[in-house]
Length: 383
Image 1 (tube, rainbow, N blue to C red):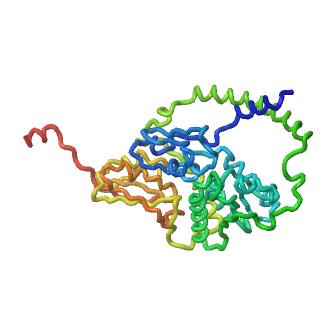
Image 2: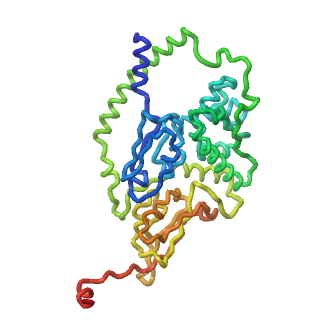
């Protein structure tokens, strides 16, 4: 049986990164003129660098708060501790024991051991919380949505405090638009129903239990080591970033779905369509194009990461008019189109029309006929 030092060493070597960086999703990697720096602004540990077609994540500097994974519009930064799926499972189990109340706690508040750990879900920092998890719970009919912090003013994660407030405001804005009374509550103490007086047996393990657990950890570690070696081998054979960003036959870079936003839409649809004509939100955007300035270069459709802007295949009767298709539900407000437009004719608003958000049909934007390029003979005549 390995000693405890061996176990710790193995566990540390196999410890996964807190964040996985899917570089091909980052708008700056796709086009160096993109101005998005939301992840860098949210990170308090200088663990992220963005610029010159590169997204660099420094795992050793990361403090696992998860703030960057929430603000990234294209979901290029994926939280690993915990994964969205694991957080959802833990929440579902805790909800049942808490009589339908959904409670999330930061690690600092949980460490006080004042509440039953089986009746709430723990995250390293509440900055890890985002709209899809909370809206899904709202659609399931939970009685309360509670976030418990550990007094952020004195916490090492305190720079994340405004971000947590922004998430609470975002979710509550969506719930208000839905016309229901449920709201996210942010507290510094656990709800009374979760408090416990006797903590013996709820936290930690006995000495005998610890060594039994340590043996299992060692066995697990050996299995994980084999899996890690296999993953490294596969990664060596994986296509490069350049290959992953090759242009498609339709003249655009590879596109993807923003899954979290899709989950929010599904949750909202389950609750019922919003009762307001428009919604102010950070999740989706409304694109407008000044057709008097536009030259129909279609650069916006080439670089749009989610396909919210697409070159339409619809042919006009006059054979000259061109169209761009815009889908509000696919727009993640990354503002890539705004940043790269050579004529500055595109604007992105954070106010979206409810009807368009839930419409399966895209909005057609009519573009002007592109300017004719002067030929060699024309240039000679001018001389």
